Image 1 (tube, rainbow, N blue to C red):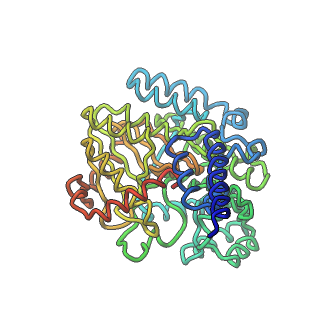
Image 2 (cartoon, helix red, strand yellow):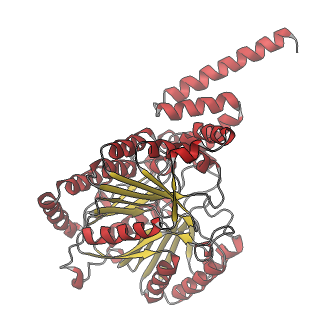
Image 3 (cartoon, rainbow, N blue to C red):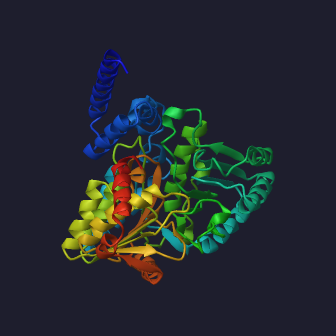
Length: 484
């Protein structure tokens, strides 16, 4: 190649790096994320820019935030659930008297999400689809007014067909059935014919966002919500699909955790659905008929529950801060479950500091992914780092571990949709339920201990014994972990 052309190309490439470097540095991201994007721009010129435009830009840059209903719950809920304020005050007073750390945690969630602590609740712990799906179907069949469903992935398989029959039958009976699905999460699972049949049967079956809006394609709604008649709510890690009953090839089972709620907390879950439904369709569901009074039989219940949610348009990374606070606030033990393990600096340091200070830290993750590889390669480097600090890292063996739970000191727990990874903390729309109850947290903790029997421990010595080539592969994958 002639020298003048080579010089021109070199100068052009240098100018390209300067321009994109100035732009992304000015966004004030985490230094690790900034460096990861700059490395991608340098290694894949052009392709890196396209990936950034699709997946990297911060939500506030899109000019859409003003058009979206806020992810905070107070303003729209205030006229409908004004009676919940005494429950919040009562719960806070009790937690301050019994356990100051729980009170601080509830205030953190309150200030980052504007979410009330409710106390008139009953919660069922539903481990795996074998327990969760029958309870969900039972509630659907009993619906008389409305069925509101929201899932990251909805599969048009045999189980999806079973739900379609139930939901179209309920719609024919006059029940309002609204379903919100994520078009990316469901891309390879839904058929146009299935959607047409749902809609022809009277079901409102709508995508969270349009796929042609490629500039927001990375911002996925990863929440799992079901609200029946405004009286019963389901949330947790389970999506809709037969693979949760009959696991994909190579896995013996699908391990997941869901909860069923009745009581005051259902109003908050309904509100989250209403916000997301409005943002997707423009329909306003903040009407009294969707927020019925708490049943009288639960007025004497004392089970504190608080919802925390986050998304790319939220002011705070509320779930990341929740996990951080639960880890550093633990005095005896903290147990975590997640299918993914991609840490930002704050969560990594919190786990290491807790372990080094003598807290019993146990992290249980899936040993491998159902269809993904790179995140699990990168996770090996984080597991080595955490295990070196004295934490116990457990790899779930018999199937795919998809549960997302955190338990602190057997007194407070979180169950929801958020993985322990950077995408869940800052890119996806997520929802977790925080339960301030020793009996319920203890039940979840016992299930964690039972799961440990199906795990093998990840050790630093064992990892060091693996080949250098594999460890280099993992280190290379880690470079791009801020983008995962």
